[in-house]
Picture 1 (cartoon, helix red, strand yellow):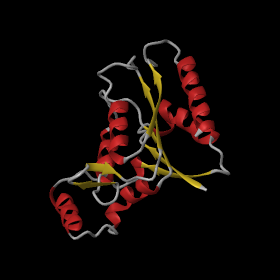
Picture 2 (tube, one colour):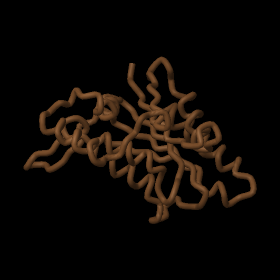
Picture 3 (cartoon, helix red, strand yellow):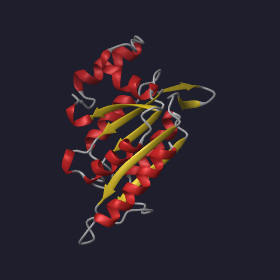
Picture 4 (tube, one colour):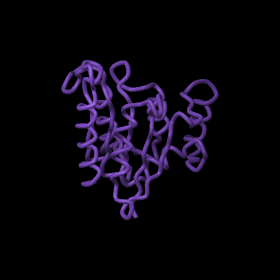
Length: 195
C-alpha cells in the first residue's frame, strides 16, 4: 500500500474553504491503494530556526545524527509516496507556519543531498505533490502569486517530479463563491481518482 502524506496548514480549521476542498480530495482517494497519514501543522510544536534551536540542528547535522527526533518531519516527508499540502493563500503566498515546516524538511542527507558534480539534488520518494489552496482574489497565472510557485520550486529541490495545484481562485470577488469552490472540488476529486 502506498503512503499519502497530507499536510494540513488550514489555519481556520473547519472554517477553511481550502480544508473543504482538501477533504473532498482525501475522501475520493482509493483506500485500498493508499494509506493516508495526516499531519496538522496547527497541532505540531513547530519552531523556526533561531538561537539554541538552530545551534542544536547544526550540531546534529555535523555529527550526522539523522535519527534525532527533530528530523521526524523530514523523514516522514522523504518516505511518503505521494504528498498533499493544503494551505490558504495569505499575503501573496501561504501562512508562515508552512514555511517553518518546509524549513524543518530541508535536511541534507534526508530530503536532499549535494555533491560537486550535481550540486544539490532531491532524494525524496514521492513522485507527485498536490497543492490545494483557495484565494480571495484572482491570482491564477499572476506573477504576484508566490504560494504555488514556491511549493512547485521546492518539489524540484526535493526531487519530486510532478506538481499539481488545485486553486479556488477569486472567491472573495463574488457574492456567492459556491460555484468556484464546487469547481475546485470537482477538480480535486478528479485528481484524487487519477492519483
